[in-house]
Length: 368
Image (cartoon, rainbow, N blue to C red; front, side, top):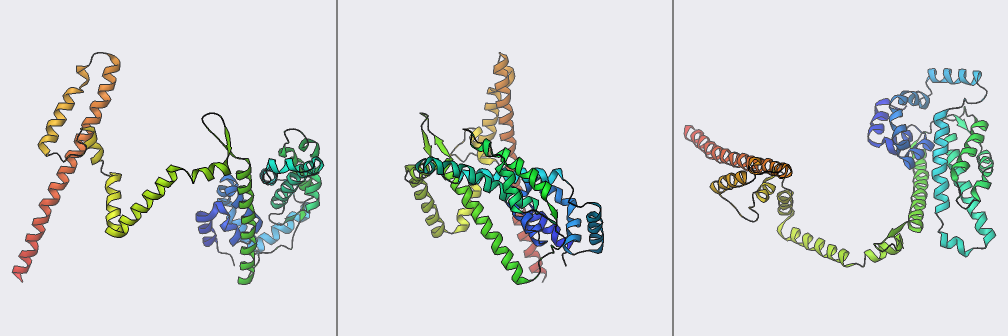
């Protein structure tokens, strides 16, 4: 039995990746959520109030069974849904473009012109049909792949243009898929550890294919434009980057830091990092007061605050622009002085507390 608390926990921590849908046995929707980040987070947010309904469906609750039977009596086919239709178009376009861009243009140029045209048509049609079928078959609905393909093939004239549009392919495929979608009353939540492992394996395999499609699309189609306007393929640019002096210097610095941390201890490195991050703002305050690389005394800090405060006081500047710049600088100096004054007071209080605590412990020992 699916638990609503567990489902909401999965929704909260893995919702954009479809973890709660996988838990409820809705593998198609889990994959759709994974490739689209929960429908660009909109579907993930919508699941916030849809989860109880999914729980009833997964557990075959009598209320869901009765309502589903009533819907099937009232509607011979599943009613049209604007949300599902938009999802079919979106996922269809996403996979259609990925399938088309997965093969480099240079590779297509080497093929026979007729074979090139066939690939330019078949790949978007196939990708769009897979995306539309995925969304159309979510829940207790089913649509045969052939209707998605036939709908996508209507848009072949648009795919043969100089600038092919996959949006028309997704639109026609979604129209026909919505018209031919039927009820699927026999679909139930899969159970058992072996079934769960099998489902996870299939889902992982599909996710790997999706990542490979994205990798191919980026490697074959993304270019880096240099300062002189030359376009360099991303594959060549990455190869040159890993041979560049900047990358070699970075690797050298990284291993030097790693060796220092191994020698002096990771605790020492952590303290150094915290010190350079300047969480208290003390180092920044020193730089504003022009004390970089110095360890000034409280008297020197007071003197420098008075000197710079007098120099950048807005009343000592005439023009409007000069007054504006001076006012900003004056406020910055005052803030730096306040930070250093606060840090000095904290250290003084801490030093005063240390001997008092020592005296208290010595008094307790004397009493004993």
